[in-house]
Length: 84
Image (cartoon, rainbow, N blue to C red; front, side):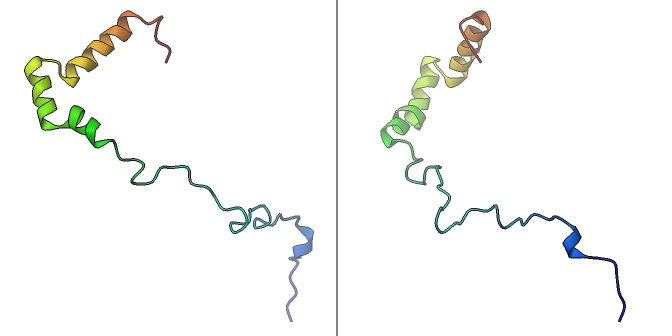
């Protein structure tokens, strides 16, 4: 019988399983909202995201692109009021 010089007792290995919590006693709590909790209010969607709302914004010139441009210009002109 061949003899090797490898002895398990000489290494101070840590057991990786020892540090894990028990999933049955302490289950991980998922804080992300579910499908129905993440849905937006239908009335808000009709008011803000529907085709009639987009058509109205386009006709009046108050589009989301224009609003974003105005917000960017405000931030650039008032850096002391905005904390990022």
